[in-house]
Image (cartoon, rainbow, N blue to C red):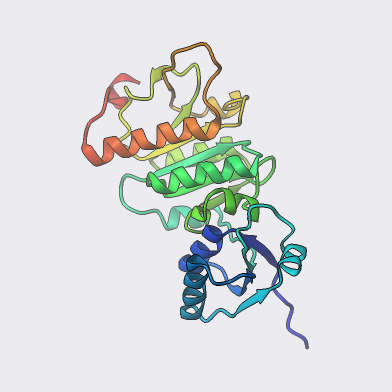
Length: 260
């Protein structure tokens, strides 16, 4: 009986392929390089692929473009197994330490926004990102490219219902905090040195009322000037780094448990 082949996809862009090889979380069938292949970065990929026992194929530019069918590929791509997400039980079983830092994305549907948020989240120490199976951008090659490969290192959790997920996480000891333009307190005034799940809403719409209802409280990013609020990825970055700042340097604003 013939063995069933595993589904694959083509990831593209130097950083996406480089980080996928380094992460080793999914099987890379082969790396594709467009001529010319003499640049330093491409040669570095040759060496990394060799260490990972992954074959490299050099292609004529037109053949490469016909296979990849995407912009911004930098002449680098790879045929890889599809990105693996996990469920909530698996994520909780793998939870690290007593003060976890997770994020929930509520209906972030643009893969570029997903990628940008994941990139900031990974750099700021977010351990897992939770998204709904429906009405959320999938971890597609476009999202991996937009994350500069950070998605290859991030734990991505898919759930059916975000409101019920927040209820479960709160029972597990998390505090759920919504990032909201009309938040109860400035993001710089809250104490984030607690088991935290930060909830970030979609571009323009923010966190949905039903999801916000299950948060313990909300925080806002102070602004000046007359333009609208920051976009989702920029706002998320500010909040992520405020959490990291407090945890790394031990300074914060109010104490959540006393004030809320």
